[in-house]
Image 1 (cartoon, helix red, strand yellow):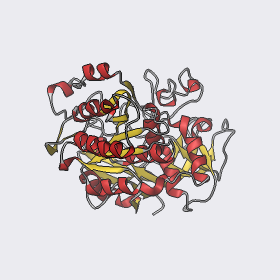
Image 2 (cartoon, helix red, strand yellow):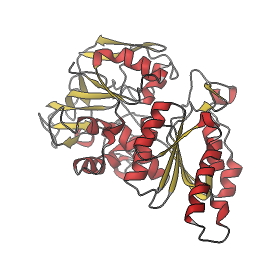
Image 3 (tube, one colour):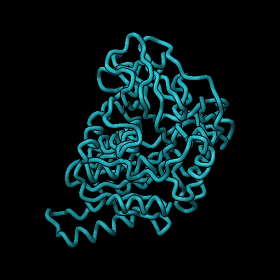
Amino acid sequence: MQAVVWRGDRTVDVEKVEDARLEAPTDALLRLTSTAICGTDLHIYEGRMGEVNGMVIGHEALGVVEEVGSAVVSIGKGDRVVVPTHICCGFCYNCVRGYSAACLTTNPGSAGAAYGYPGMGTYRGAQTEWLRVPFADANCLRLPGEPGDQWEHDFVMLADAFPSGYHATELAQVSKGDSVAVFGAGAIGLLAAYSALHLRGATEVYVVDYIPERLDMAGKLGAVPVDFRGGDPVEQILEHRSRVRKHAGATWRGEEVMGGVDCGIDAIGFQARDRADPSREKPDQVIHDLARLINPNGRLSITGVFLPNDAKPVGELERRGDLAVPWQTLFRKGITVGMGRDHDKRYNTQLRDLIIAGRAKPSEIVTQRLPLREAPDAFRRFDQRTDGYIKVVLDPRE
């Protein structure tokens, strides 16, 4: 079968690899109809996760069941399904409590497994024609419709991007009437903004980035785009909030000190950019900006990835896997901090039902659909943030 294989820093090839097959009675074999490129794949692509020559990458898969093991009971041949990025067993200590991203069965000796991801098990990635799904009853979410229909791009977003964006708002405890600032307008940041506005009732959502196409997409979703090339994004948001509050009028005595936002979301992680020079990384930039911006008693969500071992760290602190965090500011303000990978299985059923009901349309962020064979060029353009490559879906059938 054809698959996207890592062959060195910023090099992937589409190669023939051994066909996926059933390996256990609990497995299912999928014929994929869509598979997406995630920003996390770029960490591998850029060589930030070490030497993984020959690894099949990708972790967002939608397809049709072609074969099931003898122990699989809830799905069968011909079912349309999406599978979460994080592979879970459904019965371990963490899974039964809803923490599927920290499954204790699928990656023995660690907490959490995923497709095509270094350090998270030996599972091949999902940018392929066929995919083996372990513990299929726990991992396959059945879907209506047919391949290529109006839901194709919505449903592939259920594999990772949509649950991750929603998880960001869950960690930040976004609720009706809240103001929210999202740093990072990649797919996760955009879907976090979308979830805050359209699913959780936020009144104002600001999205900070510097890529024009991403900022345009944030505006189309209903958020207020903030380009940090135009000045300190914290000051820009505070100024905008001041105008809004002045128009609305103050309600409570001393409310002036609450001119920031209620919730902040870091959707970038360790590759945050230095605002003074966006060509350089500054991993602690976002946490310092959010600490300044969030109101006292606010909530902070950190969903951008931080690597335990960055192969190309920008400094000695980062080499040790550490980060300079303004704890005194967060402590003084009484900020609640939530962080970590999304437990996608916890969310994807309800998000699927919102899609079917017409209440959610995560495919609004999809910008390209390309044949699998064009993956090398798609990775290059996506990595360079050029030509409006925001969220790319690959078609394994072409």
